[in-house]
Image (cartoon, rainbow, N blue to C red; front, side, top):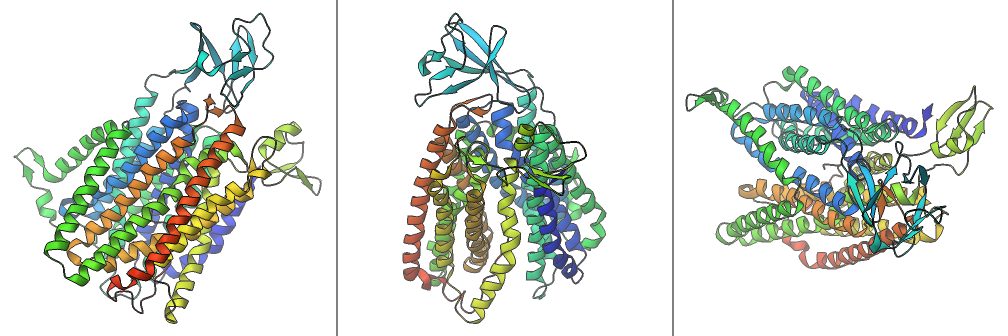
Length: 626
């Protein structure tokens, strides 16, 4: 069996990767070690993220609302904890040791996700009696009444209609919404605790690894080294490459073989990255070491070495994350308090230390950070709302019906193959469908294609002094992303009998979101460093990522609004699910397009706030940093 998504992935990787490998020969060898580590870290992270919302709804049988809150708390902490990891590395451990420690935690966390236990069971309660929903693998469950199994569906009022139920059955064929209750029975008592411990280790691991590998890359080059910018471009290609393959491999294994296989593949990837980084230590040539290595070996209170104490306290911090990640409302208050403190710190310096020109620059940087929240809120729906939408309301078949080539090659999706009764003898089957989790690779595929195009475009415009100012770029990207969601709304009349939209419209949505990413993410990161005075540049960069954390929180609220009635992880009324999803997409699409239009108008009034830092300096299009 071959998989078309896999084949396409190989083609894109070869086409985009060969130029990168050729260029890396002219850079420090340490870049290879960092490239390798971050590529596999992103592979493990996006591989796990691609399966997470499905794991919560189909393995643990969390409701959509509960799953979206859980997903939001996880992703919010993913963007908050690096503030701690970066501080610890700068003050004590050094970036290399911090990255290794983070990678070890990630390996343990990802392999821990593979211990899934047995799926939870869906139970229907009616007039004091309970009835079990029976399911096999990923198939839609059936209601067991007596010794018989029955299919079911729901109407617009969420009344449950049981198909073919005899009149003498102990419950009616129509159950009004208020007359029954859906519960879940936990089969493996330790499974959820193991899950929360694993994601807590992953959160802490990302916190120590993510902010520090990028710093090491910068340390590989001397000041004014002309190779620095291109080195970061190559490094970001590694980020994108790992992200690209994550959903293809982990998403496929998780949905076709088992959750353990998808999460296990993520763990193997992270382990490969760690081993490669350890073997490449000499290539770093001493970069990334602790600011005072001797101080780390001194004992604290004559009991424990300082570096060992830091590791121990960090492991204890996993317990704090374990508590927080299960309580999205507390994560919200932590995020709010941290944002207020950081903004107060910046405003204090604006009133007491900075010149008028510097204050205008800082204000512009804050506006860009605020605007980025709008973009990232929609962009980060890929792992939650859009994932559920792809699973429930998108036709994931690439072709409409099976095709035979040369008599012994069969092109068909898994669904189409099942309808045919299997693969005919002597036939090579090429899988012509996506799994729902694999759709998340579409975004990164567009990034690999668009990154060099936008880099060349911005360079071309900059050389001719026609490069738009950063606020206009933001406005363009935000509007493009909003239009991407409107495309799904406009495609509503084209749904099939199963209330599924054609796959091409999801592809277009991701394409427009990627256009937005090209004009927001790299531009925003660059502007934070250009506009911020050296005294607070680290704080401003931290605020940028806190903004991404806010996007995760808002994304959870949006996904919650799309909640549908599910049984055994499967939506009961696909038509109602489509209607609810498109209603939300229509709302956020129009709001975001309106925001982008206002931002474009405002750009004419605030373009002078940069104080000349952007004059004759073209922006480079970058790649996925999140």
